[in-house]
Image 1: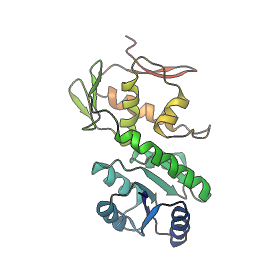
Image 2 (image 1 turned 30 degrees about the horizontal axis):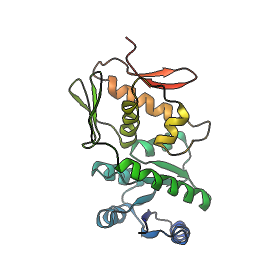
Image 3 (image 1 turned 135 degrees about the horizontal axis):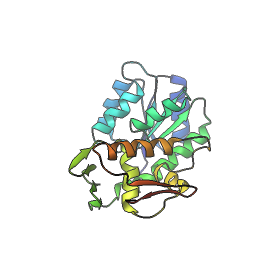
Image 4 (image 1 turned 60 degrees about the vertical axis):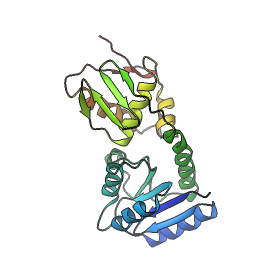
Amino acid sequence: MRATILIIDDDEKIISMLRRGLAFEGYEVLTASNGAEGLKQMLENDPALMVLDVMMPQVDGFEVCRRVREAGSSVPILMLTAKDEVENRVKGLDAGADDYLVKPFALEEMLARVRALLRRKPESEASTSTRLAFEDLTIDPDAREVTRDGQRLELTAKEFELLHLFMQNPKRVLSRDLIMDKIWGYDYSGESNVLEVYIAMLRQKTEEHGGKRLIQTIRGAGYILRNNS
């Protein structure tokens, strides 16, 4: 069965290029020219992956992404944008996007990103329903809920995946390369600090009620979930 990919972009040239390229690779392709239409297509067709432009009329890509995640969908989202500033990449990832591609881009790179995201989906869907706990921190993969000392924490989709990885590997040093491969599916460019940004956000949220730091930095090696006290 062919995977269905939904393209949401108001640029007809981009839509035409992506439709041809994806169809040639064997994917079923759906398109929408604005965010509102895209959300409607998403609800009606349940695609395997979404390619989402940031700058669109009516509802922009960031808002589409937020609404999709708030609805509980874990569909992989690849965001497209002409903006290449770090803060915009982080904003898209924080809204729940899985990957980010800056225009102009090579079709071959975009197809490689799509393949990587689709390969990761079965692993995500097969995640165990067993609740995990470390110290006073608990995570429920089925309900996608995280609590610390009884307080519920509101995490984005990527923050949840990152914390889940740590909870599956307590007291084990996880290298940067391993984390990037498991969570983002490939290694970002050397100047990217997206992992460091997410570690900082996770620490802020897990420590906001006075909890001790559990995600520790091991200089030159990576990160580890442990209590240093």
